[in-house]
Length: 402
Ligand code: PLP
Picture 1 (cartoon, protein in one colour):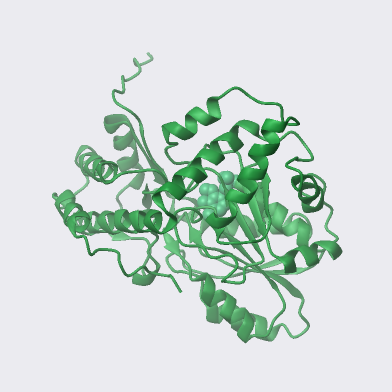
Picture 2 (cartoon, rainbow, N blue to C red):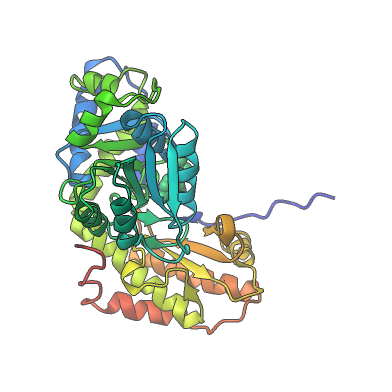
């Protein structure tokens, strides 16, 4: 017997830490008629977004835009700068750092993963110590995730840069900013990052489908001698074409139309205000979570992510039961636990385009879902969240801004 589909009224709350809710203005731009990717209208659009995206990463360097998921940009960063057998030092912040590590082995690199507990940020001292041992400079790149989306932990990238400098090591610094760019302060040039990797579906408020490499001069130099095979991902072809507003293949024209609008929205609000809005939503969410009697996955006060909160369930309680109740009873999607955290945590996204009303609506729906799922908790988490949002002085001391 098949059961009748449950009618879901109201709009769906997509409270994942990506993909995030696409603002109607961006959706409208993506839905506009497709244009000639070799015509003058596209050229103007391309030159505008290629220039307009740079301040989002706080860089004057070129930004490569690929029609791919962010995983493609991970690969683009590696194959454009490295050669077979090169050492790559990575840090196990969680699921996404681990995925990048596994990807790095595939084209013939020699990645090593410094162990982490999936509850803590990158330890710059561990990076420094490992680089200091590497006197032959076999390690050619240090790769870290700025905001680990699987755990809700943000790392201090400026401190990683300083660690590499203290070890006096020439390795490139590559940073995954997939869930931080456009939502958490990220300073590509000031922090001396060589390649940043990003995707469109999080702080940039677009649907999935675009990815980015932000490329320093040192990375461009490395690209001259890098010997890993590359075709589609080759920066040279793209940069040469981008000079005149073209791409070496058919670009994702409609997503680029959306990107122009999304960049405009970030500028309208102001990047610093965008960062503050995310920090406040995160504080309010943590207040509710703690009131309910649960613990965030992140165990360091200075490293709580502004864009998502991963909530640990007490031993023996299914985190997926909360997500199921949220979806079936509240028409809301929450993120699940990934890898070793499957069914142990659920993840609340407060990322992209949202208001205080949406933050509170999300938290109220979670409290309702906890009741529906029969999970013991202290009710009244919303009051705790409202108190944070009502306090105008909140969030004025940003964590992790060096
Ligand atoms: N890096 C981080 C930090 C992510 O959160 C994700 C996806 O959520 C990825 C990389 C992979 O991105 P994609 O699924 O777009 O390939």
